Length: 497
Image (cartoon, rainbow, N blue to C red):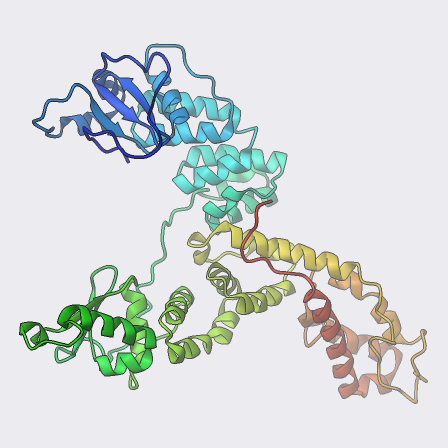
């Protein structure tokens, strides 16, 4: 954000901008992030920008300076293009998508109406060059009209991964996929591409009353990042968290000195500030309470608390939180995966991703949860890519033979591992059946299991009645599928591509 000042800011070596922004008769210097000074006239800035009008209306230093210095966060290329739009000189030529987005963002930030209109027109042409980039940045900043234009171009021109995908929400990427599915002619059915929610409502997730929290006779006050205060007992907290025990001991030394003291400070309650939000800290403290009964129904909060529990070496709390994984994963597998991936919890993320393989790609892309508005599209994109790679891996397998997946001997149909048995014929159909749902559950207790039973009934009544044999056959198929999809790596953090 721009800040008014009279001293040159420290940073890169200062240079003077090119003409016409080198006029020493100007009364304001805009100092860019890369160290370039733009000499500009206050009057032009006031006319072009309500932002600067408000800034210059504030009381200024009584010390008279020939030129007021205003540091800005934009680089010199962005500032020069922005000023050229506002000055009565030839407009800049902007034909690079990233540069255009930077200028467009600065025009909105400084409330420059003329520059915003100019850049909106320029973006309508540039959007065809890199539509996914523009869509991602537009969604991140809430530029709905621009996001809609870019989304239509993405559908027409296709989309590949870009680093900027990490900066928009999974919900925005989901709406892009939905537009691709239904067609640009039905874009109005999707709703705002940028989304309508900018955060999760976690008010339903709270802990029950705890004897550990809020006791005025407690000897330590833990202060959360939002300044919420928790009165707790040092003895219990120290047992629950070796890291907090160390922090408390260090705070006591600072307060009393290495040898301790008998002054008035010993009568005051020790206060320790932690970089943890109050909701998360409340849950962690409730998990430390032997009599506490916290409500563990919020997947996002549980992963956030687990992340902090690991930092503060709260082993029991970590164990309790991990015990909720299976229940939460079953209740909402997609939300569970997104949060596990966001917090780089590899093992639970892989388990959830494998469960989602029971969906086709179309079904998976159609799933939506409110949590998608709060996590990065990168995690969602990599889940879809993982599904595609698993489909390709299973479809390419050819070794579905009796030697690798045997069926128990049957005296009635004469099965002895020959190639003309019904089970062998069924094995030949597996790659096609798995090409869209590459999941072990497809056969191990799923729809595929029922198909195996039907195939057996049509060929041999004895095989059909051999329920343990069918279960074993189905389980062996599932294990082989799991063996091969385990070779596909689920990427949680995207490297540069």
